[in-house]
Length: 176
Image 1 (tube, helix red, strand yellow):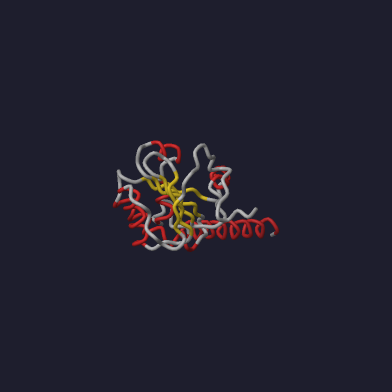
Image 2 (cartoon, rainbow, N blue to C red; image 1 turned 120 degrees about the horizontal axis):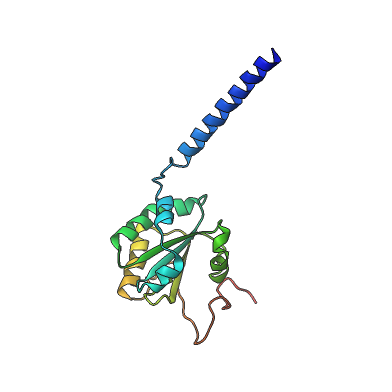
């Protein structure tokens, strides 16, 4: 009788585990997610490739759990489609330790954060906080046209002093 009870318990635990696995896959968008944030991250170029290919680049620091990042993802996907071949969009997940050097280099301490680069791979600006589709379109158009960035709250130009290292430069968040 104990052996039969053990089999039933194992079968029940197996069924519960299978149901939880199915629920988890369903909640994450299936095996091949159609969530814009995951799609963009999956098709994103490697950062060194994007910065060296002669096109302006938008680097978004994001997290899967970030509601603002998820809300902004469809507009980022649309921007990437509108400017395909003229602008690179790179996504770096702040929860992935692989990107820690970039997180440190660009002083990321809030998301979403966009780092903006010209076609020569030089930093030209930063955007902190969620952006609307119209704002992203304006930022992307300015980068592609090599024009000044639009005047938006949380968007700023960057410039490097001759010989300055962006990894050691003081930023608006640095105090000291």
